[in-house]
Amino acid sequence: PMTTPPTPSTKAKKKPVKYCKAPQAPKRFKSAFIFFTMERHKQIRGELERKGLADKTPDVAKMISE
Image 1 (tube, rainbow, N blue to C red):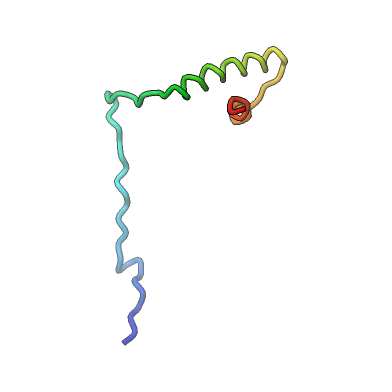
Image 2 (image 1 turned 90 degrees about the horizontal axis):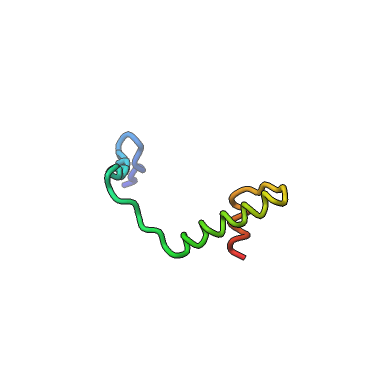
């Protein structure tokens, strides 16, 4: 006997429940790398402004990783 593949009407898909964080919940901690990149990001932005350049955030992130 041949079976027919399930159609959308016969097989209901469940939507994943979206996780909603409580507004009073504490924020996630920042790692040492995050503190480093935040400080370095400010330095690089300052240097670029003095030179009269305005780079986008992804470009600055690449400079930080160098």
